[in-house]
Amino acid sequence: MIILSPGILVSRFVKTGALCASFVIAVLASTSSLASDLLIENIKGYTYTDLAPVGAAPSQFNKILIRDNKVLSTKNAVIERLMKPDTTRIDGQGKILLPGLIDAHGHLTGLGELLSSVDLRDSKNETLAVQQVQSYIDNTKPKKNTWVLGQGWNQANWPSKQFPTSASLDAIKSENPIALARVDGHAVWLNAAALALTGINDATPNPEGGQIIRDGDGKATGVLIDNAMSLVYSKMPQITAQQLDQQLQRSFDHLLSLGVTGVHDAGINQPVIDVLKQRAAKQNLPIRVYGMLDGSDAKLSQWLKAGAYHDEAGFFTIAAVKLYADGALGSRGAALLEAYSDQANNKGLDITAPEPLLEKFKLIDDHQFQICVHAIGDRGNQQVLDAFDALFSTGGNSSLRHRIEHAQVIAPEDLARLEQLDLIASMQPTHATSDMHMAEDRLGKARLTGAYAWRTLLNKGTRMAFGSDFPVESANPFFGIHAAVTRQDHNNQPVPGWRIEEAVSVNEAISLFTRDAAWAAHMETTQGTLEPGKWADFILVEDNPYKVKPEQLWKIKVLETWVAGEKRWPK
Image (cartoon, rainbow, N blue to C red; front, side):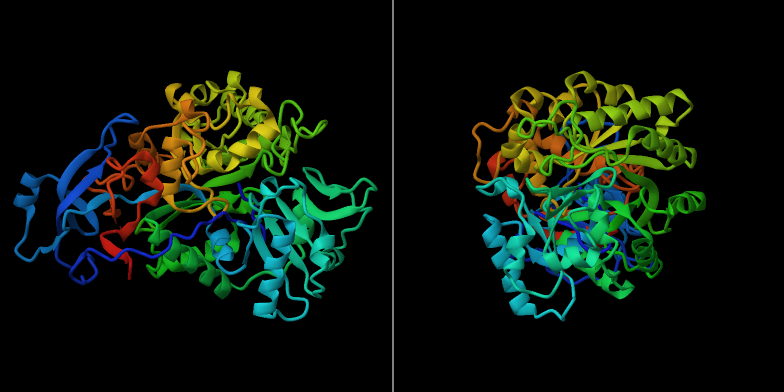
């Protein structure tokens, strides 16, 4: 749910605390094609299989044999036949082994920025958020005119429920421009210095698909929504390739600590492409990245003509494009069929209007790239469904597995259309538990029927994939699995769960974070399960997710993360 920008993204990233000790008792050499086979035994292993339906129980095994970085077998009789005298053996000490978790929608650069900026996700009100910015400036002492960046504020969680203003930031008395992104990345809060640098004033018109928030006297308050944010992002200095690489490394380290072995990066630009290609060429990508090109970039046609990209080791792929239909619910930018329940006459924003959206669909489909389009509101989703319907009626390729990212609020009469149009619903379970208090304010009870409707979509036969939308939400997949199963927060509220009828099973949730996420990126033959011939991407965890109480799922800690048969975390 992030709108990418040159210098600032957002997060609700949650720190995981102390890390558990590794169970492995030997330090291994890299399992390259020249190294010996690797056998991990005495484990409680689980994997889904390609042919089993979503929700089927996983297969179980107690050994896994790895050769040339791939799974050779998990069947004991086969393993005994294939063992070599020099096979390296590890005693797993009864630990739980699962396929590596794949986040089907995240933002690598945004997560890296979160880890090096002002984190406002826990701010309880506007005053406390300003105090956090003041502390950051006092501690870091930024040079004059250097941008001070932050992210994570959410006025929906403040007692006032009101957007903040530049006046409160101006109390800091800093000469530095300050830009603070809302938690969903669809609004930015500026001080007067930032407004002045960008030339925004009371007379600046709203750009198409964007809004400059104004007070009752028509004065700009310092908050920009959706496409209006480009007025400030275009004026920010670009980071260097070295800085970008460092940000990405922070993201990789963090994701590996959470058991994430693959990410569908939702909106990459040329600098990110360059760094990831360089890393892939040097075999220095620790996780697998499926890149969605930023569909708003001027280079889109050039990228599409160049064709899809796949590195030989399977760590970096570009075969999709990310588009935006509308904004976000929290900032009232999601496009609704009827006005917001808490703001009359506001039906949200079309970030991309229907006609140009369909034109981009045709361009992307013609070049055989997957379309991944952000849609939050019921009107936004309806317009996307209409565009896909029009695309396929004129020869579009449904086998490309086009996707709706978020598919968050869907009119009940439109729910069946995703399966009918053979679309993937790429959804993020923690959005429901983060939004549950705000969503009813924005929509009213009547329009919640098609909101965050995982169970309904699965029952209608829709293919789905789960992710987190990090750094909007925590990148921890077990937070997502917990939210999907319980529809509760970490305090087990509400009881029995918010609209619990839309919950999914543990089997379904883990499958949607592994096998089905791989399928959503055309990667089902190489990853997502631990079947023979696929990359040996797996994790070892502290507790068994199939046996712990559902309310404990979010507490599961990752002990080790392996990618391509090599232990990547802890190092």
